[in-house]
Amino acid sequence: MQAAEKIMKTFVTRRIPQEGMEILSTAGVCEVSLWDSDEPIPRSELLKRVQGAHGLLCMLSDKIDVEVLDATGPNLKVISTLSAGFDHLALSEIKKRGIRVGYTPDVLTDATAELTVALLLATARRLPEGVEEVKKSVSPSCLSSLAVWGLSGSTVGIIGLGRIGMAIARRLMPFGVKKILYSGRTAKTQAAEVNGEFVPLDTLVPESDFIVVSCSLTPETQGLCDKAFFSKMKNTAVFVNSSRGAVVNQEDLYEALSSGQIAAAGLDVTTPEPLPTNHPLLTLKNCVVLPHIGSATYSTRGVMSALAARNLLGGLQGTDMPSELTI
Ligand code: NDP
Ligand code: DGY
Image (cartoon, rainbow, N blue to C red):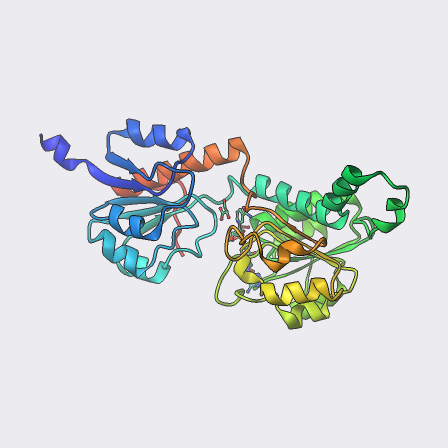
């Protein structure tokens, strides 16, 4: 009876790969309640289900703000997010309440960099258009009508040379990229590996043939890629974003793409997600939109799930978390 009283309540906001569920259910530390769906939990349900929880295991689609924290109540010790990004968490309020936070960086870096390079190539080489052409008729004129500028000999600008930005740069070098420029708050020693040059954004934007956004979403990066930004890009340049949709002003991007101000855009992330099926960006041939699948490999999602579960247990038990967010 006494042991049962010690069991803590955990709420998991969506189905997660079994690796994490197994860790939680065999630990004997918490009673797990799950929103048993692959879809994001509706806000009204989230506010109900969190009540009294000691631990929350959430997704990037769950906005954990004051309302959710208040609805959860004073038991809450730990929030473990199944993501590397943490812009959906009201961190200052969470920290003020003494709640610990776990997240899942590093383990998804390779998968996300791989997807970003795939998206860059698909967008730059117009693969979706080529596939559609084949379904209509194979015309020799496609050789010229689908011709583009390739990566070889190009300048690539990376906004945010963090874990994922660096992994993207490493993967792009073997394509014969001439120069890597990057911008951010601070120069990175690891940039030497790819001869990356730290430059102001005002230099990166007009000089790049490809711009890849891989920074975190913060008040400074929100809406960073706007009309002024796109107007400085080369008309032949390709824009790729695998960070967060809110870094981009999508109306300005639509204008830049439809007016020929820039050549093409590839987006793994948008606002909102998913985009409504009648969204203007989806009408453009030169815009390739994916449903936020950067980390979506079986092994990566499994490892993320296990890490998120271990973070949660560490927070519940007051011990080390394998990946605690300490900022
Ligand atoms: P890191 O913390 O390693 O990198 C974040 C980078 O953002 C840092 O290099 C940082 O530069 C840069 N940055 C911060 N502020 C600015 C700014 N004002 N201007 C330019 N750059 C800035 O994180 P990760 O590489 O692991 O992840 C990056 C982001 O990718 C996540 O926050 C998440 O949003 C997104 N992501 C998307 C995925 C997907 O499925 N598409 C999967 C995983 C992550 P500095 O150090 O100089 O401050
Ligand atoms: C993250 O981890 O931040 C991604 O966007 C989803 O895996």
